[in-house]
Length: 408
Image (tube, rainbow, N blue to C red; front, side, top):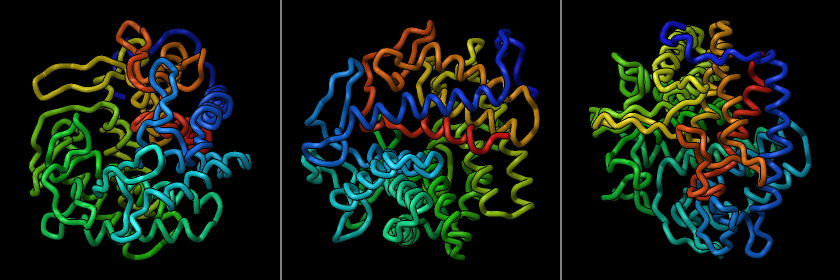
């Protein structure tokens, strides 16, 4: 570790890795998963409710987003695979069936972006980011249960992405298309995002499910696609000078804005390593190991003395110092993987420090689960949702499982 000064490490005793693993497992099974089982299961209209706001009020008629439902599918599939609790499988199967019945486009293939609370499509665009998360959930259910329909759905989406969303001229994947896979003028993922044809975020969340599919389906097509995707990160997305990830691109991979997203940096660091490891190319693994550490070091520019990671630095130079829930979770995972790759216990200390910050400022100790964010002075944010379109049991549940299973 070369880019971190001593103020980034808390001086209180932190215990060993075994303690961290135990605490994260307890967080998973006692706090995160029960919240979604008890509070978000929609027994009136099927699937899961669309929203609980920051004041713990359930909005039964909120629209239902694909992202939340696919992340629920992934989370409970992975939880069943690692914990073998039959209740987790029941939740995963519930999510799978609801996605099949309501989100899957029976005519054109792929999945819709958004439904109303009754399960009727209200936004049928084919956001490629969403296709990736559906693939992620389907492939994880297959890993957990061996259910053949789940693998069939995963492969079906992979083939659609390669046929409809891949740019054969310059490489990479488009942001969005119409329901019938035709070009769309407004491609942006959310109101926060730029309207560009290619983004880091979409590519990161295609890399992630392709890794998962590759674990269970060793077809040459996905080997080739994943190899090229890793190369796209190395050649286009990771900034050669700063080692931060550039976020938005034109067709020819020209970066459009100078923005630093610290959470995406550190998330990409470990997802790239995982992708290379599953691919199994020894030379590529060694190359990505080095790059992964460089990305982590760049991300640590956003690390704070209290152990937390800030949100982003915009192209105007503004620094958003809020501590978002998902960024803290990815800081724990990314730092743990940096320790795994390098053997440097300083990275593990960063993970432990960030987990301590989460315990003190992000956990909702009264109602369960995590709040959206905390302010720089540690005050919890109860304005943004506790559960909803973007607030799902994915980053935090995955943090618990990744550290428990893969970090030794």
